[in-house]
Length: 395
Image (cartoon, rainbow, N blue to C red; front, side, top):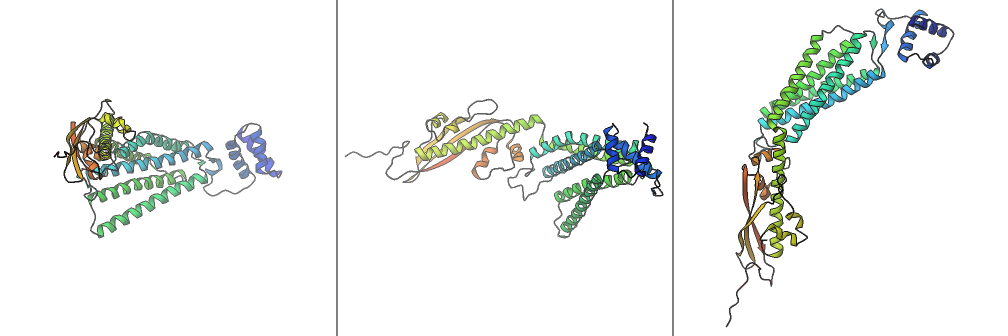
């Protein structure tokens, strides 16, 4: 049975008073697709005298978007969220690197507040998410370009308008914040660039889906060059962002070296704390790190080794515990490790950069680097220091 015969059959069913649901159930049961039934039903309605709009020539042969197309559209919106979030986060971190804020840069490290983890995650999200978004949008447009009578579902319309609403509200809020900051006299290059980033990304989303509505929903003739312009602009933003991201955060090899150095700095800080606690408990500095194994409280410290080579960290006693007052003793020890990068590279990648005495272990040059730690021990009443016995005069 051809489509015309299907339309004639449905027309007879309609005149007989059969409901649309019953007609669809019968036809789908014998193998007709829901899409064919909907199209033929519309033609039958016109044949029995149902009026159509003046511009209804196209609507007489309309086809609703299939479930696959609806899912594809929702998938593109999910990818849009991933891409825009990654793109904004990537450019924010790049701005943090090249335009440091003195109020945040407490340690004198250029790019303080910068996170290489965020940059690498954003790059990964763009490399995977952007091509998928590009393909899904092209497939969505292809369906409506090949069949101009096709109409989308109400659900996809509402979601698209929600995206337009979110983009427009973001643009207005960003412009208000930008003007307010300018009027307050606090407009810095860092804030201005971040505001421009939000404005550009939100503006591109609003502009693209504004023309998409005119093309898909209202069937206006929008030149393909218009959408291609948005596509090339987005590709340019992604490519430039990825390139600057790698320049700021380093290659995977550099990131691996930075991770090793961060582990080494953390190990040295932990070892320094363990040795100091050991000295306060036993009133002497351990001769070697292996001595920490003799106490179950510090055995976990002695097991710390270089994460890349597996070698033990260097340790030596610089000054044994010496009496500085009747109840106080003070000593000094040294810890060393071999680093691959300068300490500023670790600081730039560490979100919770340590402050106080522990921060010195993160400040080092490339290669073998050492630092000392001073430990003060308060002698308990009635005890004698093991390292410094008291000489009692004999009559």
